[in-house]
Length: 229
Image (cartoon, rainbow, N blue to C red; front, top):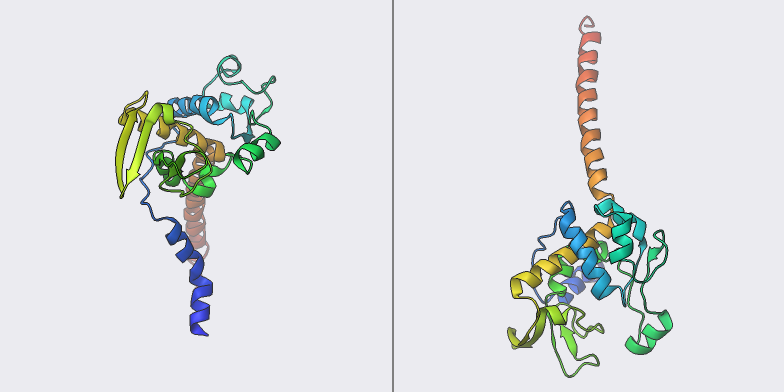
């Protein structure tokens, strides 16, 4: 009975540990860095939006990261006509199921569900695998159905006995590619919680006000009860 209870409570954690065989790198993202978030938005639109949408973010919402409506229309709106439209994928659900077997997921809250560290490591650990349907595999997500969308930037790599081997160079060097991934993760983190910074600031302010009120309440109580014995 004790063993059964142990597995009921701890099996989910054991499953997570089994999935996470590849160590995750710490993501250097900072959603307050709007220059990085803007660069991540460009990477997302150019390399990800063809398959993955972010339908809970509207193009008009990108003005909050420091872009003008004109900049959004001219540089980021390739799959929509109106600035108020959601950032939907260019690919239809039917076509994506035919090509990949399943529709690629929407990435609006992927940073909240998977975590920034997971995304940062995942996007940097694709490798060639002739045994898979797409010719790609991933160290963090084994047998992933997604091909390496950023391979032209990172280049081709192989993973042999736990060691990385370069097959061909990409358009970016390792440090530059890591910076590109950092920007993309930054954007996805921002999309998952666009108002996180303002909520944090309001929370700090609320705690400060409560602290002041507590002191005033304590002084009032002390003054009120000073003559009571």
